[in-house]
Length: 67
Image 1 (tube, rainbow, N blue to C red):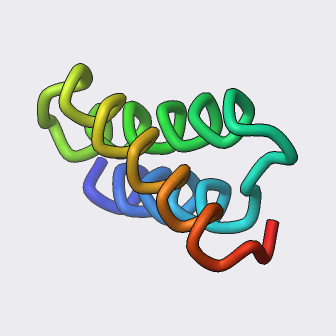
Image 2: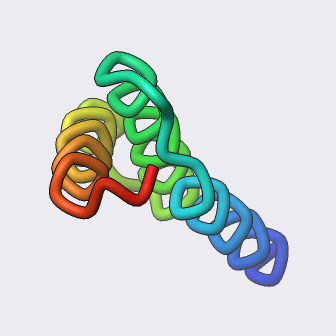
């Protein structure tokens, strides 16, 4: 069970880092999905994961303009 959880965490993290989105709403949704998935895997608060993931992805994409 522990290996499945770790593998899922890596998959969610890689997906979140690989995709940025072209528009601000896309960036927020992608980040929210990655944050929620990570929170589920780690047993944390999904609501907090949504907010932190969305904010983090938007901030990163806007700051780096790599997306």
